[in-house]
Image: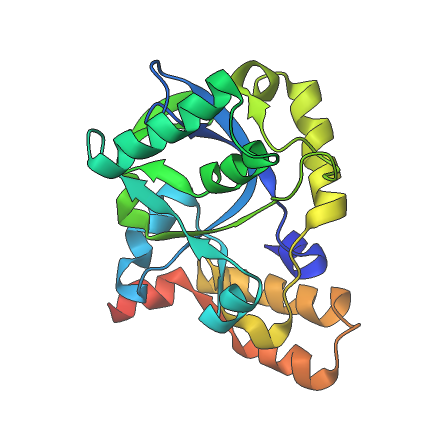
Length: 230
């Protein structure tokens, strides 16, 4: 979270379950930042899985930065079969308009099965994705103009040297900035963690005005307190 406050959200290559359009258990990694659109009453289950520190941003900030909810596809639905055919035919025959591959990559960054496999801590686990109400920021555009690949194949993603190099380029070029007025919450695990974050805000973020610093400090809340109120 401290890195986000200093440098913005870092789009990293995340391995995605793309079996919804592939005939096998294919995985591909896209440069994205993931957010969830859930009420505070559901934050407990989310942080239990992803970690006990986080940042809540305003919906206005998300819209202004062109974030968008992902599309969840039910396997076997008309929508899933149509996209599978559309994308597959383009990749196979190269018959589409010039730039169709870039548009397909753009769409692929925002499509997920309602449930599938997630790669975390070095292993695949089963996950019900649709419960996260996910929004995303993705690095999209013409592949010829991007500073990073539009995606990595699974074998590239698992090559730590390749992954670290591409993630670093993504951070240096495409980090998504956020300001104090865009932040609704700064979550820490326990009340005992609050002083450290307050000290960081006061000493490391002094490029902000005193008013902005006060806003940030007022946004700090512990999950310990939230859980006690639910």
